[in-house]
Image (cartoon, rainbow, N blue to C red; front, side, top):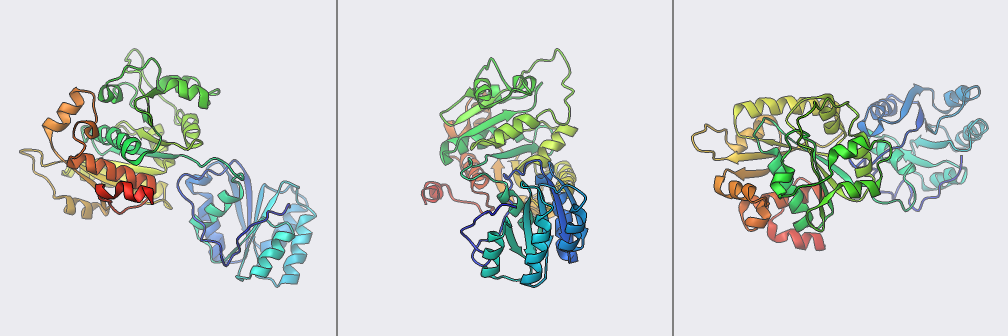
Length: 415
């Protein structure tokens, strides 16, 4: 156990969070608990999507159980030990545990006293961190991530997955315009990846013909890196890069569940925001991208079929991502002539989500932009849809739910 000095203390340190973009490496973890509350939190953390690369075991007994187990077994990368013992007993148990620990093993102590002196004494004795019970799932995952975050490491990027509730809902239009708004209005580097390999529209929407694209990234699995990815991307603006689909129907695209994993890992390891334009299909790899994404944006139309499909997607996400924020809902094509519609407020209430954007039907505006290979922010930057895309993009960047008026975007970003 090597000491990990910290500037903060249990009393002064902000509460740990587990933001969507954190990544925990492939490690083994042993959790030894004394109370059911900490045990339940550790068990739930083990199944969190951010911990998918770890192997974690949870058992009762606290430090004495850990000492007994590791007398005859190699220690894992991380030991989480709950203890309510007095200082003398706690320090003695840690010394006994240290005799059996590998030098690379880290120890996280969960205690029941918010004591600055105890915290510093534990760090001096080689404990990696000390947190005060009760602990929740998000806090525990965040603490583990912080332990394995390299000092001075590059800030992680963010993956945002866009999907529609039905064909023709306009999810690709929302994804492309939002990516454009983030790059332009918000001023962040954005990678827009169109994952609809046979029928994607990113090339048409941005009026480009790219010699390389996302299929090349898949075929280069095993040697894909930042340099190669930069070669495969097509620059649309100074801050917006595109990965285009092949649009070739010579063969079937029967993709494995893990087909896009390497690309997702590389995208997340950079400081850019990546927008994934998912096709309207339900396959193992689409489900995996939804589960793995840091933010999910669902585009629906105000009709009964969209509501039914949306409830199914929400149920899936609730079970697969129990500790994540709910997806962001965009209601598109509002006011389509001769269509019976559900009012936006009633729609949002029925599915239990807050509306992030309402896009009115405007055939002339959207049709003209699509035919010219332009975004709404280019042809009508002051229009209501352009403002909605900018607000949605800002919400993804700053990770908050409240809408922001367009006139306040630059002021907020400057602050």
